[in-house]
Length: 123
Image 1 (cartoon, rainbow, N blue to C red):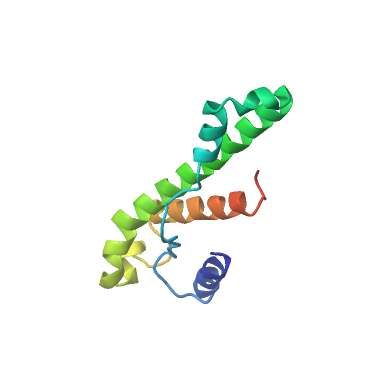
Image 2: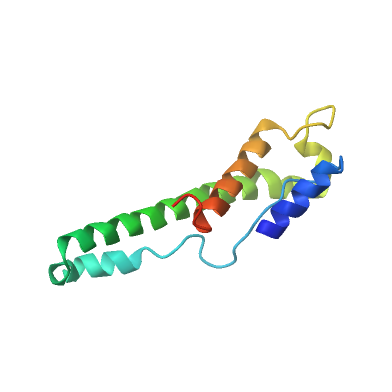
């Protein structure tokens, strides 16, 4: 993901108009949340200190939230970017070719946020 974003940024810095970078994970679309559900339903929390149970619940809530953000990013990329890739990169830019259209720029922002979250920069 970092390499793809960096290469995209470098191409833009050279004045090129590449299609938005799309990051895809094959297989499951978000991290597993079932571990927390199994622990909760099995009442394993009774064996742990209350503060630890709270911290584990918070952690798994964050993991689920990050996964949900990724799914929103992927759904947009799959429905709005991938179908246009074969049409050429002009579809993604303003008429003057200077700037990504706002919806594509916002999706790139979502990917950068996801990268920061999964690399520990925001969590």
